[in-house]
Every structure is written in C-alpha cells, then in structure tokens.
Image (tube, rainbow over all chains, first blue to last red; front, side, top):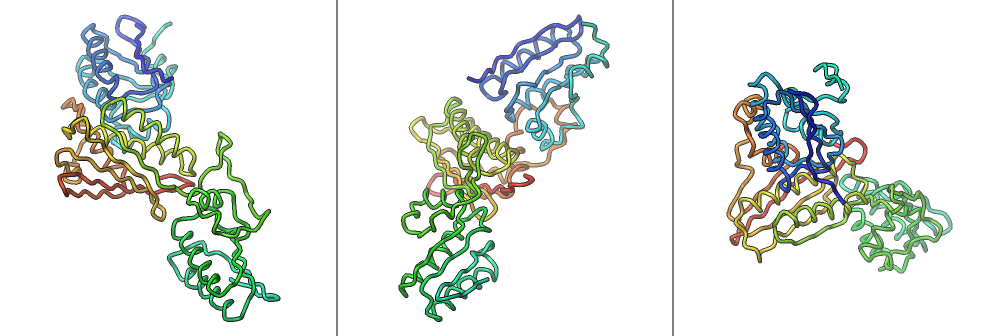
Length: 118
Length: 258
C-alpha cells in the first residue's frame, strides 16, 4: 500500500521540513500547496522537502514547488529539495529545472549550510 | 549464412529484418529448397529479442518450406523468444528443436523478461483513482519487459499526463471510457490514446517555456503538456468522428535508456 501522506516537522523558528510520501500527483497536490502556503504564512523562511520516499511526481506535483518557491525567495528563504531518486531527478531535468530549483543530495549538507543545530 | 550437409541446411536467422539480411535469409531458404534439402534448421541463437517482423519472416520461411514438404525447424530459440511465440499462439505452429531453449532471461521477480513489447490494451473511465490504478497495471506489465527503468518511468509519466489532461479538460461523460493501447514498432514503443472528449491537439500547444520565468510567474499548471512533448520522440494527433486519436512514440533502448 502506498503512503501518500504529507507531514511536516518544525526544525527551528525559520526552518521546517516536509516529509513526502510515495507519490505527489493530483491525489495530494492540493494538500502540498496548502501545506507550503500555510508554512510560508507562519514565516518559515526555509522549507526543506524530503523526497527520499517519493517514487512518482506528476506535472502538478512539480507545479506545487514551482508555483510556491518564489514566495519563499522573496522572503529571503528558499524551498530546498533533497533525497531525490534518479527518476525524480530526470523529471526536473526534462523541465530544465535543475539549475533553478535548490536541490541537495543529503539533509546533512543542508544542515551544514543553514547551520541547523539538532 | 547457411550450411548444407547431407540434405540438411542450417541457416542463420537474421538479426535485422529491414536490410539485405532479410533478402539473404529468404534467398538461402529458396536456395535450399532448389537443392532438394530435406530439413532446414534456422539457427535463432543470435535472436536475443524479436520484433513482429522477425516473427513474420520466420512464418514466411516456414510456409515456403511447407509448400515443398521440407521440414522447417527452429533451433537455439531463447526462452524469451519462445515466450513470444507462446503469447502469439504460434508455439504450436513452429517446430522448435527440443533442448534448444537457451539463455533464460529472468527479471528480478524470476519471471521471464519479454524481449519484445507485446501489445497491451486497456479501457477505463477517466477519474483520478482509475488513472492511478491503470498506471500501476502498466507498470507491472512494463517491468516484465527488457525496457530500461528510465524509459518505463517516462512511458508511465506520459500515460499519466495524457490521461490526466483528458480527465481535466476533455469533458468526457462518465460512460465514455478512454481507450489505451501500447505496442512495439521496431525500436519504439507506441502509445495510442483514444477519447471522445473535446478536441485537444497538444502538438499545437505552446512549447516555449523559460524555467526562471515560470518560477517568477508562479506557474502551477501547463507543465504536463511540456513533459509529454519533451519525453516523447514523436506525437501524432488526429480528430475524426468526434474523437481524439493521439499516437506517441518513445524510443525503446534496453541498454542505456534515452
């Protein structure tokens, strides 16, 4: 059974982590957009998106990131994606987004860059 | 290549059926017939994968031999190729030499991996649940072929995006199903979609897209058509009888993917 739940964990006052399930498509994309928007409204500057479990992302799923990232950037933060598989990376590549979205391989790298103490 | 000894001929099955190899093969069969050979063995050892044109060619050769009462026997047939004969119900017609089956091709699940993409068809009403279920079925089917994981993923993405477009924009009534089929043509997988929704030619859809601009404009929609166009090798759209017919080809490359 696929787990498509979305959860978030607050890391500190300005950083929060969204943990994705196995798919991000039309069945849960509205939930994703709502979650990001709510977190932005709560003044989280950095929204980290853990895609380690994600096996399928639709165009609407990509759109949920593409349509919200500018708000975080305007507020001096960013949406940072990490843990993507080769297939998911291929989707971002097909849409020429690898140079425009912040994608990191591991959470550890982000922790170092944002100086997150856990 | 062919060898004739003691009224027995051994002829190599051609790898390529679109070049002179095909003519040489039929030429060798005819040559053996003229030489009053009793038995013709066609060595299939090099046929790791077969297309429908290979099957047609072997059938044609078998018919030529049958007309002259010459025994026509296939040898060194791989399990994958034999599986194709079975699926096409041709295993009873082709005389395959016993103990000739070789080089078992197993997928991770232990099932025989098909070296060709056999026709696949489905028909379903376009709603979110059905599209997800049909995508999973397609996934199960494609994983039993030799197609690379990357190409499988792209085929499934194309399938998902096309059918989602039909669901969202086609205004299809609940009792009008989408018809989908998948087949192989040479080294391409052909995806064919038929629906009775409103006319939508995605080949005419704006393909210009600048990622930085899309981010600035907070673009949430319209990426599906872009993905389909970028992942497909060719797209053909036709509107007739108040229906949309969409044919998409995707190069099938076992070794490296696209």
